Image 1 (tube, rainbow, N blue to C red):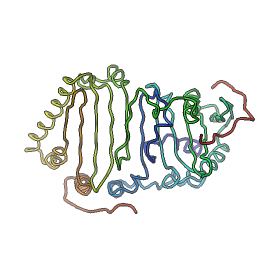
Image 2: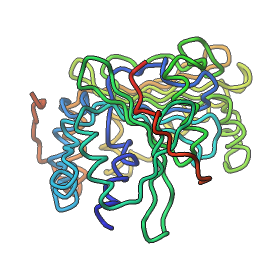
Image 3: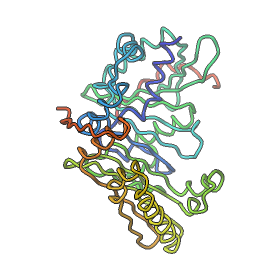
Image 4: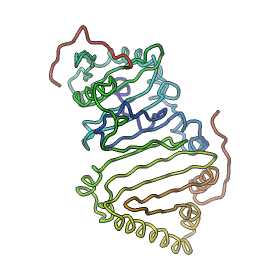
Length: 340
């Protein structure tokens, strides 16, 4: 059963996996949050190359990765091209994961059937597979595999909730509105070089009201986070929407105060002092009801700092170049989806 768990884990590894350009035409117009990660850009970045030097687990090697490659035929470094995760509610059980991959996905799903119980269902003419542990334990997962006509491209869609998956398939077919048609999210688009893109709509205020202890955090109504590398620099950009201009300015003042305090502490704390060039690179801007935070530094400097921190504040310096649940009829007429 370990292999079966690893197989389905491919769908849950989306924070590691990745993406081509974000395609809003695949995301429902009423999506309230999404996460998009670009593995292709990350693997080619100087930052990731340096992090691999510092953390060996980032090399996609080891027993578990070998088992995935050998038994399922999928290599995450070459076969997982794009991942977008989104939800129309804040319930993670209703999230949908879209994985841009290739024809290898068909082989992987066939291999997975040897280890998990798979039931084909017809939902609106689309073939949905329900995956269950044959021993009756574990979660139930639903999947749909769409094929781009005339190419080896595949889009594997996975969700714990069949209705959420069916809704995503309807969007892909053009039978339901997408973010490209306009929606409540206003997601925007990742910047050049961004390999992590997170966006959440006004649901944030509801979540923070329930869970956050910070009074400032509860001002946040929507947010967007981007992290990436461009032109030899690593950047992080955060945009926060508040209820009004006053709230945006209050958040900016709190954050600026925290940086000023860090600067004072750095005068007596050597470890903090080493981080000050990074902290002072953070810039704030409050414009009406939106607060923007931007950080950008040469990637080589960031790697030098991280390596120094990893060695207890030593000064070893290196440079790393970039890497060139209800039973449904098993519909015989239902097919894995064409890429509509």
